[in-house]
Image 1 (cartoon, rainbow, N blue to C red):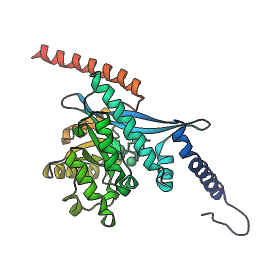
Image 2 (image 1 turned 90 degrees about the horizontal axis):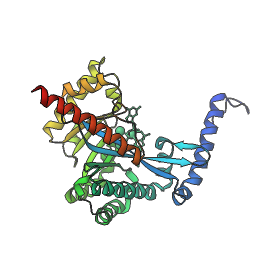
Image 3 (image 1 turned 180 degrees about the horizontal axis):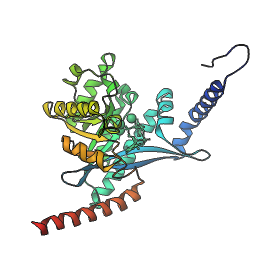
Image 4 (image 1 turned 135 degrees about the vertical axis):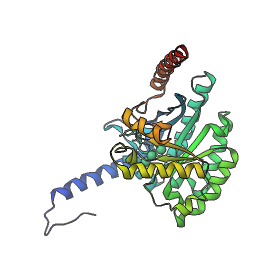
Amino acid sequence: KIKKSGGNHYSFFDVKEKALIQQRLELESEITQAIEKDQFAVWYQPQVNTQTHEVYGVECLIRWNHPEQGLIPPDLFIPIAEANGSIKELGYFVLKTACQQLRQWRIKNIFTGVMAINVSLRQFERNDLLAQVKKTLVDEMLPAESIELEVTESLFSEDNNYHTPILCALRELGVKVAIDDFGTGYSSLQRLKSLPIDNVKIDKCFVDNIEHCPEDVAIVMATILLSKTFKVDVIAEGIETQEQADKLSDLGCFNQQGYLYSRPLKAHDFEVWLADFSLKNNEIKTLKAINH
Ligand code: C2E
Ligand code: MG
Ligand code: MG
Ligand code: MG
């Protein structure tokens, strides 16, 4: 939508908007080939429990290594992939890559926790997702409980509930389901009551000002209370400072993810980070034991 500000004069905004549309068109035309050319990579971000000091989970996040534009973040190309349908292929690539990685980590006893995988609404079309998940779990010999699918609240809006049977079938296999970006979408509390989920991810926007904003504290407390009542887990994402981490732990939200612990990392860098993290925590545990 290009707005004309009278005659043929385009405002600066139009120029910017045109550039964005141009980039969008370029990426859209390249995305299918980019999968074949192996330009996508999966990075990993740890999920930490502040009570046990364990890395109990990892979220996998896709990156596009574009030959000219460098590393492109998913917020830029996922909507494009969703619009032109290539998200199905891309989603399957992420699922396979993450599960292959998890299998390697399990074999080497590096990481045996849960792999969280983002899935888009469109991946639920034609029942592809269920078949792909089943096949991947068998191929990689993984227990269903070792993967968690992250979906957004939009999946649960009134006119979209055709996903519910698929989610239920996945959960019957043992696959976990998490609601991502919780609190930013439109799912009513009434709907929440009947959702087939195992985990709620409190969005970063409620974490950012948690030390200074009583409203955000109230939202986080309410979410924790709801999750306890519905017997689902809760995790907060986007934690950047120790103060935010402490505040969340005080409120009873021990599962945490954010730059404070680590940014998303390439597989090998994650292994290095994890070894270092475990070493430090063993030191903490030893010190605690000595002092007792
Ligand atoms: P998300 O699933 O909510 O993932 C969290 C995003 O927040 C990630 O951005 C992560 O790098 C970032 N993040 C984590 N901790 C912090 C922090 O402490 N501070 C800040 N500022 N950011 C933090 P990323 O990797 O750019 O991904 C953005 C979004 O793209 C994701 O949001 C998700 O909705 C989507 N996405 C990523 N990978 C995939 C994928 O494989 N499939 C699909 N369908 N969507 C994906
Ligand atoms: Mg996510
Ligand atoms: Mg999120
Ligand atoms: Mg998001």
